[in-house]
Image (cartoon, rainbow, N blue to C red; front, side, top):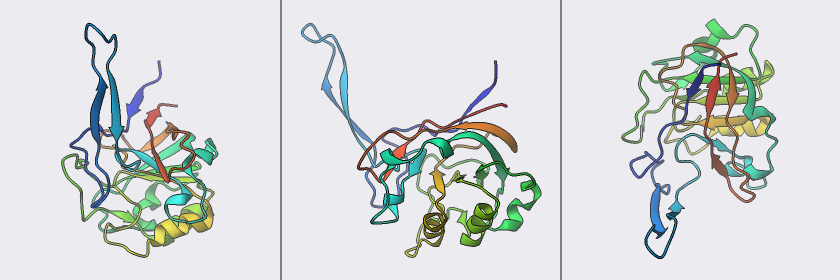
Length: 208
């Protein structure tokens, strides 16, 4: 049986969220009792909590919602590249050692241990030139273990604008702590949310 790596962080009320975003909360609409055979809950959360796929609607007022996206970029061969301690921005130089024969999906690990107990205001993001270079090489999806492909305090979002320009898809908040560098099969399908700007994913890697 092929090994699986679960690269989705746990999601609960303690999950970090971007400052100002909606945290996870859960209420019980029904509970098992003599009069009720089931537990039923109601969830409230930003679609950017935990591992998630951004839709163009997140960074483009005319962009497609996540439920309208082609699923092809979210499923298939990918490469995990380590850029641990790369600093504020991932440059092409940080990835150069693993860029020969890139598949269409690239996930970058920046943390030695992903912070699960608070939002990282100093998160590592992509330099937009790196995004452009990856697109030039045929990459269709980029992913990262931090909360954003742009710095947390960015107002211009240059890397988001670059994926908008080049038509790339993106995964954020991936848990890559235990994943060695190398090639895998990525499975990270967004929900069919027809008006949403993002979707949670249960992201996994499977050995080839």
